[in-house]
Amino acid sequence: MGAAMRPEGWELRLAAEIRAWEGRAFEWGTADCLGFCRAVARAMTAADPIPDLPAYGSEYTAAKVLVELGHRSVEDLVDAHLPRVAVARARRGDWVMTAAEGAMPGAMGVVTGRYALHLGATGLVRRPVLTAEAAWCVD
Image (cartoon, rainbow, N blue to C red; front, side):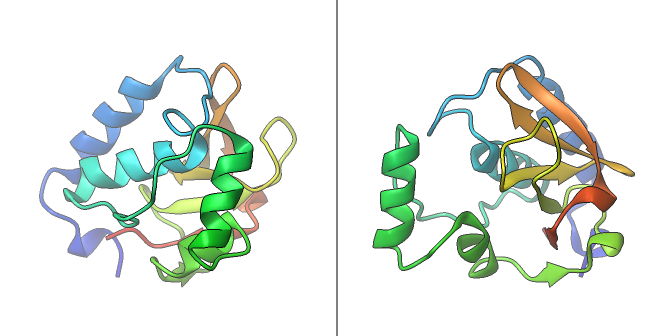
């Protein structure tokens, strides 16, 4: 798995999608950390790794959706759709979860190299990948 299985030109689509999210403020259901990750994955691969996720508009309804789908957490949801990889093996475009300072606990982000981007309150926040607690491969 990894970059070798991604469609040609994925790197340009990754960069373009990240630029489209720069300066975008966090908003549940439309511009949140999972939405950012899913948008980047769709741009890179033309597929949504979590295609049937119902709409939600608040932290409460997001938690309710998780429970209704049979998941205890966002981490559990992502585990059901993507294969885990060791954090140190995460590649550009893969997803990570971190509780690093400045990011919400359990915040999902997209690996861009040594750093991952997470959607914060007022835009993208850069955190070292190696501070992540978990990583998933996006092909």
